[in-house]
Image 1 (tube, rainbow over the protein chains, first blue to last red):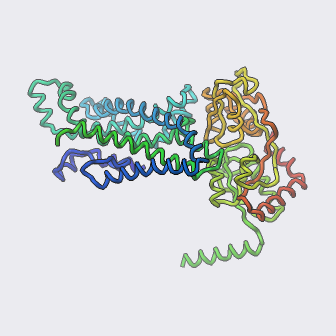
Image 2: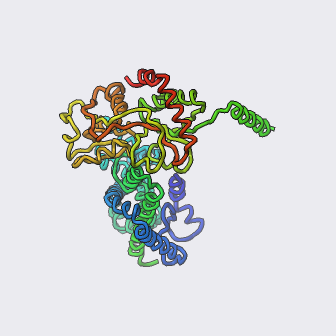
Image 3: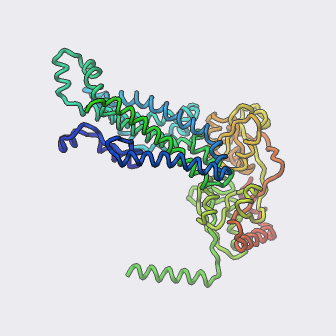
Length: 277
Length: 245
């Protein structure tokens, strides 16, 4: 996966910042390009892909309802499962990520080492292997339903990635902010929650949005552990009808559409959090 | 220099094989279906079907090459021409016949239901409202889907479904009877926990056939010749004794 390299690049934004002297935004291009008003080309690219995908789905279903419409009617519960897995995992991984990020910045050597080791171990194991491990290997000792196993695996994996983003984001805030807050009598926790994190959120949000979309795409891996997500529904359809081309064309288009919509939402959220700049 | 040597070597090989008149047929195998076809500890693909086709090749004059291929893309690969034929315990069904051609049947199977030893279920009807697993795109999976009220779960490999049955996430698994017997009677770690309770009534018995691209008559003829020669020589019994206990 190229994720790891990109994450490694983002891990210390202060270096690049000092070199360029530019804004504090962490640039990660992990997933679908998030539309940005200032970037005219991308904005139209988003529109082209979005309306292109919708148009193509409608066209295929109306021109050749057998099998395209059949496929479209076969997969909706899979789309729902994909959504559920994504949403639950993202919420949980944000919590895990925040704790990990703070742990990585902790002055306490034990906490710091624990958080760092967790990140190191999880980043070193492919998500697919983690899924197999949690479901089939740990399942030997205790019974874990597939849906829960999928969410645990994605949370553990993305919690570590999120942790790195949180750490980098908090780290990117000027130490002067902490000094100022502390000299005004804020405690360390107050400084963190009232001064540092609100500012860090602006830096953190774009990469978190990217992770969100990357996570959605990675949920296609959970089909390996018998979670009936979009990809598995598609594969079930294809293996019984042999319409491989038609099925995977439609599955790809649906994934694209979901990703494009989510990137739009992330973009709107970003604009909300950064009203001035 | 090396390139030239290699080229000359390959040329000799090609000429030699032409001289022997041996036709090579590439068979796709999903080697996760013991005892019909699976990967042994020496990483070789072995099993009943493999022995059968190797013998057929010897008798009809072709050399089989087995290519391990994941099941859920195996038919797409045949359509795309990645290999000549599929020798992977493919049951001949009407639906599949529309998409590809089949050789003479070479093995007869039925769908067996496996449940944990402590289960009370006797037929698949007893598992209503519960999850029953099978490998994706197999006749076992289609058979589960036919039963009202049972929740079908599809797996990439039958071994994963068996593992999940053992772990307690499934109420039963449906697959071809030789495979079911292999897990329930022989497989270390499974045979203590699992048992075959019934044979599903799917209307008729199923037969394995070798699948080839639609319209590939020459190849089909060659394979059929091999299969009928194996049958004539009575080798089937020998293979059954060796692989299916």
